[in-house]
Image (tube, rainbow, N blue to C red; front, side):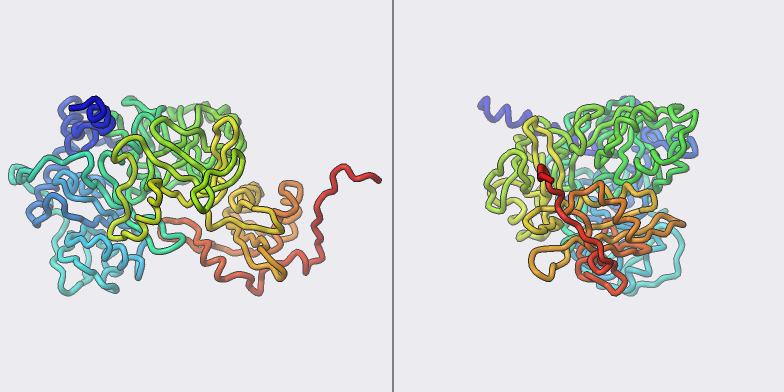
Length: 543
């Protein structure tokens, strides 16, 4: 074996370090009584008990004919059943294909057809949605819960029947390898149909490993709020298994129950997305703000007051950038001081910011972030049954994120926008992300979206769609006056529309394309019709 080949092998994790079956075997043998799953009621599930439940469920799936390499749909909410079935699928060397519990109609039919699974483990509450659509290759439903819904042509059995003696488990046809597909996780579909991201065990290992999350170790308990059909919920489960640590099942994020859940589970780390940290920061200061175990947090995006947040709650703060297809290529230092940063390039990845022809743009300029890794299998393995999307994303040997970024001279990276969300007004490029951040600073605003609408003359005008916080009323004039001292003149919205709820994808991302299609509605406020003029401030003019 050459030195080159040996070095390449060293960058691919060993089976026993990344393949879920082998890692769970190792952890359950080394520390069977250590807690792996912690629950808000103070109870826990040990590594030994979890392994035994996984083996029994795997035996049940094998009895249904599930074998190595098969795809299996899981359509369950977060909880013990979801985790047990997920690991049982991977125990057999089969591929875990979770489905968002909000999916229905054509979106649901699309992901079922794309996965092509014959077996689905499903919550009884979701069966009515299955009855309404084309179920593609599905043949067998394993149902969690009671139901009277009948779906002709499908074999049905209760979840309890998966609980079988593991002595009946067949031997694997071959060892499960690091490059084998572990899961297919579907993207949110904000710009088109959801794509199924093929992730190998090695990809997940790189995405959840020590270079991506340097703050985590085996003593940590990671509080998980995101669903397991989302990469943000998948990574903690895998990352803490690999470290021999634990996860806490947080349920839905709620400001009032957040700190009690931390204390009940002994959680030491979590990720807060979007306005979660803002909601916590807006609560009145209390004497017990530091009376908890949560000493480490990642905030995405990094709020301007992150250091104040860290001091108030006695926690160290990080930020990062990731998406389902990549491997956390950008991570910050602890308590980053650079406003708005996502962090810096982490070792093992090459990053470029490029124009539409993949030519690198100058430092400080905005372009698309593209990535490649120096390790095999460290990024996604393409999109399931979608070669066109795979080729487009991987053109010229680099994965194209579709996100607009800029980088400063010190190597700090800054997210600007989704490429398709950029707005150009009177020769200036506008980040909808930056405008949204200022709108969200208004205390009466719960959520918002900023999109481009055509200008009567040329280029774009800015439309802000805003949802008030519960019990609040927002007048467009009031919001505009709030924004004037905060935004450059060309970034100020011309149009403001107030909505009770913004349209969302099943993964709860705002559907900006719907808002663009709706455009200017009858109730949309127009500052020009209101007689408000906005002009560039003249700098250095005499007078």
